[in-house]
Image 1: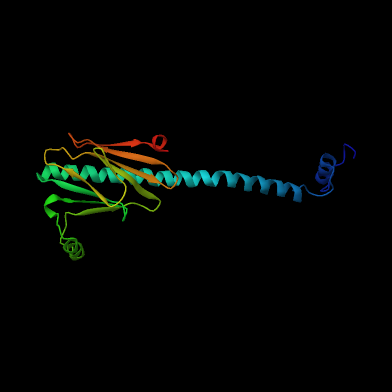
Image 2 (image 1 turned 90 degrees about the vertical axis):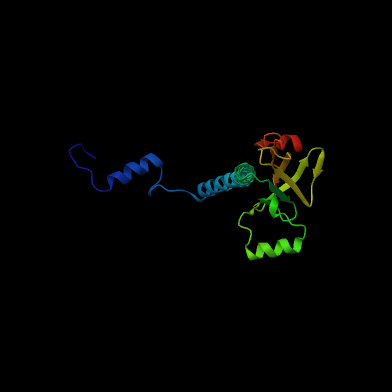
Length: 195
């Protein structure tokens, strides 16, 4: 091409062909696409388990905070109302039930009827999400792993004390410590201690 001539529409293709060694427009080969798809698939396999573990641990952390909040609620109601409150940990139904001690009944049939009638406005219940469960409850030297366990909060602010342990399917565990003198509730990560 002479310097005085202006390049035609074919000039960019010619320059491109000289640079790449190809005559047509540049693109991806099938091999390049397969390599990229393989890398994306491998990264997906590595990332998904970590994300699901994080979500399961987040669900456990949230459940522990809600259970601790329920215990604090029972303590506050006991001190404000000058009446003892009972917190029941139900292993079978995987829940936490709070109610004033004066509502305690010996006959379970009557208790179930009252729940259905809705005559217990003070009663609160928190059901743990799936994948989270009670591990055990310590009351003094006694460790319970089935049935129901009770913690009593007194009008003075104290409690019967205890430790409630919760865990998820990924073997992550937390303990909710209830001080028997002050009734304060504290959360502690015990994953390394229990496994």
